Image (cartoon, rainbow, N blue to C red; front, side, top):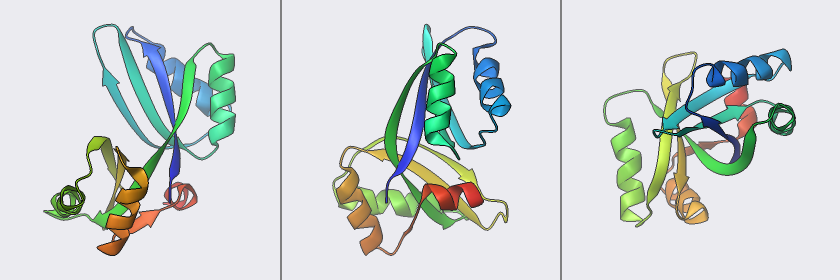
Length: 143
């Protein structure tokens, strides 16, 4: 099960991140997970939001370069070794992790790992074979 993720390219300067989050808030778009990566000149903000198309539209209207990519959300117990076990599964399937980020849900019992793999469909099959729970965007937004 793939989850749509918003990717926003932004200049690496003061206030740009605040502008994006304010724009989303004004349009009642809820951010459920995010990651920021930067270089000297620009950053990439990756977001899981409750209203993907609305977010894309309002951000583009405000001058941001926006793309949508698919990621996989894997739920694991929030305990030592949770990430390591998922990565071992992926390694055995000879799949490369392009990037990942994580968050803990409200109960604190489980963590959600967001992955982009080089072989997305193969990753889903490998994870499901090892009985990992793969979450939908709706499920993530309800956590």
